[in-house]
Amino acid sequence: MTPEEIEKIAKQVSEIVLKNIIKYFDNSIRVHDVMTPQEFFHYEVDAFGNVRHASEKEKLRAQLESLNEQRKKLLEEEKYELLTELEEIYAKIKQEYDRL
Image 1 (tube, one colour):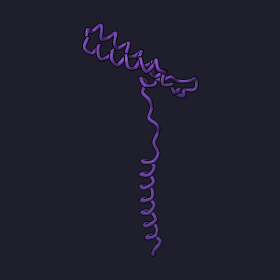
Image 2 (cartoon, helix red, strand yellow):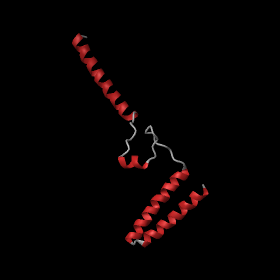
Image 3 (cartoon, helix red, strand yellow):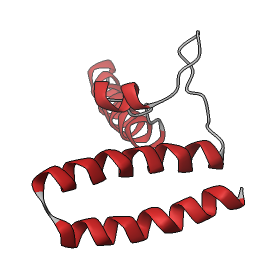
Image 4 (spheres, helix red, strand yellow):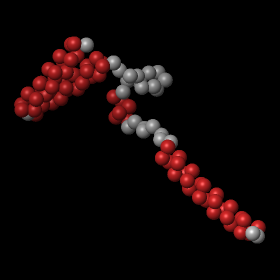
């Protein structure tokens, strides 16, 4: 083989290796999804910017608070059918919250 042929084969091999490496890294390394500002606002964050993992009771309390806000909106809009369904959901979550 001549030096030009060896060089040509070496380039082809290096291109194939690079393509496979890029495919491997694209499929295996995942960057964590970045939170939107709305998601970040609703998470409890410590002084270092780490997301604080809430207990089950804290999560339920947050759900109850959001359901209360929705309840007020439904009362203002006079959507009583949805309000009764929301109150049933609220009662179930409240029962679970009280159990904890």
